[in-house]
Image (cartoon, rainbow, N blue to C red; front, top):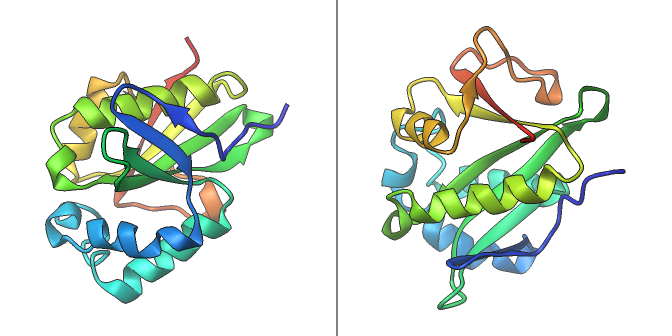
Length: 172
């Protein structure tokens, strides 16, 4: 059974839904904060031309998701399901970012819990590609149970990223 990469998921704090072209303005308003990207391997992603490419790739991959604050309906970030490898029973969750007002763990934990619970119904292993120097994201991975996979490289698109590490979370 193929995984549903465009679900609508609701928790106590957030609603996750398929990303739409109409979300550009609201999502770029969040992403244009340079501090969101300061420890990211692409620290220039706050710049409009760079983020425009990121946004186009999210729409094109078929797994781009908008994250909304459930209380206000405002878009507060984005994530993706991508690079499903059926023969390995594996999919990647990544490209996640949240507005700084939502940092601190509670919102990110709920986003990841909702996404993991959903995708683990059909896929056994979820991998996360994290910038090796992005201590904030690496700490967040540890908090949600991510296991560092030493020596593992990203398989998506046939590219190898030496500035990243891979974490995995397997179906309980």
